[in-house]
Image 1 (cartoon, each protein chain N blue to C red):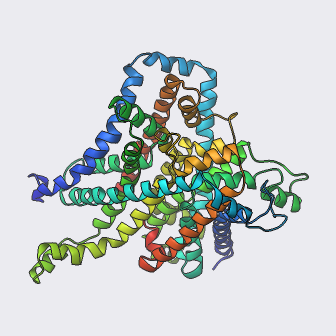
Image 2: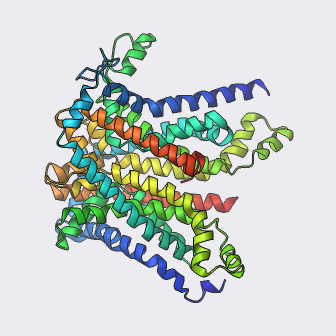
Length: 276
Length: 266
């Protein structure tokens, strides 16, 4: 195309939005990075941060809870996306409503609901003791298990939607063709359906992981102060402790973590896209 | 069908059912609590009552926050729809190297930690001498809403055949008319879906807004979190139930206009 070589005035239409985000969002992030790396304190604040064993607990908390949330979302989200892509009628409508409706209810409300569900006299405890799985009522609220359940609940739509977007484009006849050629169901899943849906999985995993690593409202309601992640520590430093030095350091570490996940996922999906 | 296939089918169906129930659990709990008489969220409730709805009607903190959030979401979504659509058209029609990188940048606020974005903006706004609460909130919320519009409209436009506009013009339509009659209808679903999700994201934003609200101007999530932490009672469940009802209404309208399936294509 000739438009690739000479300047096309229609490009100017993209300018307002690009400039807007560049000034209001891009530059502030660069300033934050610049100040925390080269400003007062500078690199020494990072040295101090990584020398403190508590920081490693915080880092481990962040990564471990985000990985667990991502895993649960993948395990329950993939089959849901599969049914959503293949089924029609009632099953499809039910799944769509179950995905879209909770998206329209705020995180605060959902985290608050999980507070109620996970209490010692909450619904989960009642069901588990009723089924005889627990000998006595237990409290999941203020535990890491409770946090992971609540967070997985809130983020699972962001796993289902990208996988569904890929799966619905896969020709169902591919599976039938493989079956005609004698491939077993297990073999077919791992050699046909799974590889074709990998780009969706990569996007979903990257989305859920970066959201779970950055969550602030859910931990503050479901687990409380004893469990600190990079995001809660950042928020707390700025909003309550007025320790902006520590807050900027954890913010930059968190930013580095999520930016590398975003870049890695973009690179991976380009490779996966190119391989097909 | 072999036995393995049958079992696999059942497992998949079971997991999907579990997910649907799991997804709806917090909503069901919220609605149930809002109609219960117990102030300590006992479920099942000892008896049913409307006392929390009465309390909500009397509330002097929640309503201003509801209206502040609605205004903010409407305004920032409208701005994002204009800026984002122009941007998507420009990027798509002007093919050039590095376009992918620009699209990634424009969509990146969706994936980066809100708290970090909020802190960065707070410091820069302060340095620029911007202290007005409303202006700061609107500037920040357009950053939240814009990525939804850019992403969805860009995806939808890349499926649009621009020669249709030329065809319409050959058939005698003026250029603005051709845009209005051909391009706009085919983009309408993308507008509706991205507008809806952008609106909801703005309504729900906590981590960026928290840095720009003050004692007089609070958005709904901030007022609600404060309420839940300071004086938790089911009034918050009552306001949430009303929001759920509102969303069901929006979903029904969306289903009529666009179809649920296309709404999931975000």
